Length: 238
Image 1 (cartoon, rainbow, N blue to C red):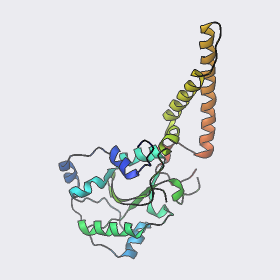
Image 2 (image 1 turned 180 degrees about the horizontal axis):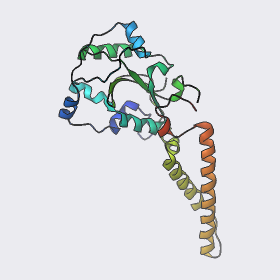
Image 3 (image 1 turned 60 degrees about the vertical axis):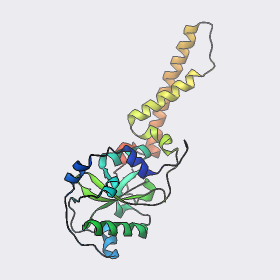
Image 4 (image 1 turned 90 degrees about the vertical axis):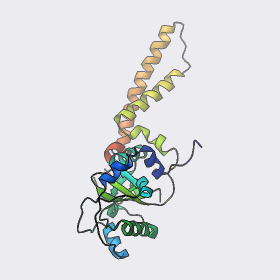
């Protein structure tokens, strides 16, 4: 279906270039550790870990689909204007199923995850001054993240389209040029001389493009503060 809501995990999997299994295996070595009780796990989710270091684990084949690189996460967050921030900034409730998923993974690999991050829209974070589709990741280090749990509902299908102009300055310019072209191309303007019609439409196109660009910049500053590619890891709302 064209107008199907967006599952962010599926988007991440589409964006990711899966490396050969032997390369992934070489990149993940074993680090032993003990599992913790629920209270200790919650403290880790709140950023109270004593030690934070890169984890190297040999992922089983069924878990490799949950491994994502930072570049893949950045692309999806930019596309849908999402934030990728530490769990202590998340103001929503983390379901118990997520804790179970973490404990199962820690038991499976005999490792203790110390850092966690969540992908979600900005309103779900307690951002500093200056239940959509959250995804909980464990930080492995070296730009790798292991998807632990997903909950909530999918994003609406048109979010990507509506927020496309605010990905970066290039997408904003392209959107304005396309919109201006469509508006001027279908204007019912006819003059005796074809050259006059072309000149008037080109003048209107140029004027409209400049006006829309300025208006978009002002609106973007007031509404979105910055482009998506610059705020996907920002803990500030301005």
